[in-house]
Length: 282
Image 1: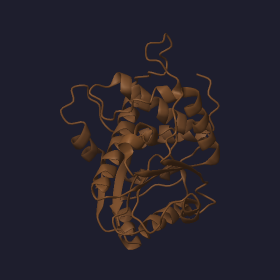
Image 2 (image 1 turned 90 degrees about the vertical axis):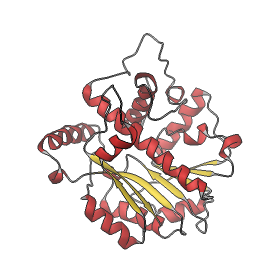
Image 3 (image 1 turned 45 degrees about the vertical axis):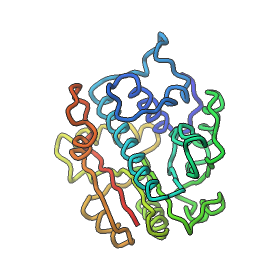
Image 4 (image 1 turned 180 degrees about the vertical axis):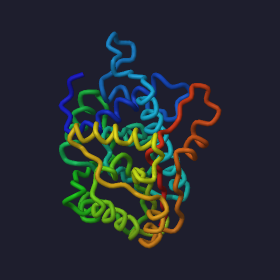
């Protein structure tokens, strides 16, 4: 599958999201565009992308659960009338295209990502024949060198209205300073705003088995040129979010994710043990 892709991790995430649509039943997360955006055909002779090793199954389950949880949280916000959704580090996320104007209502979607990754996504959508709806705005940004507030404002984001943010598969690759700047920007928004993001647990807090899995994963992403940079202790992160001005906070451990999304499955699909999902509301 020759794809000119500037982000190895973004491509891997997209492939595993597509594989989830084919391999796992019932699905945790439905994405009817996941295969199309990669020009994949589950019936084609080449099925090498449908890797189903124990490690890949855990990664695939974790990705499906975090995407499902983010969109569940967005739905909660939408029920309160929220009209702005910001996808940080969007990669090949298809939410905006799956929710076109006819069922998206007045929801505006802002996709924020590195310029090179965003250009790659635009090409993928074009080649797959997937239209970008009018309510979706692409916002190119480098989290390490640009500020979220100004970049969004220039794209038409209304900072006087509540917004919900999803930030998946990103924080572990950023510096602590860049993460803090983004969280402060969200915390400064009106009441009703919120963010969901995943984060890696500090290695010293992991079990020996989980620490070994972490070491292997860290080596792989570093070899791909995208090393892990930042990790958190859950209790300290929750305290910091409250200091920034967030009120209601929900920190979901892998066990909590399993209970919410994988209960009573007979295929043994479970989330990985290296990361948590944090949801914080202003």
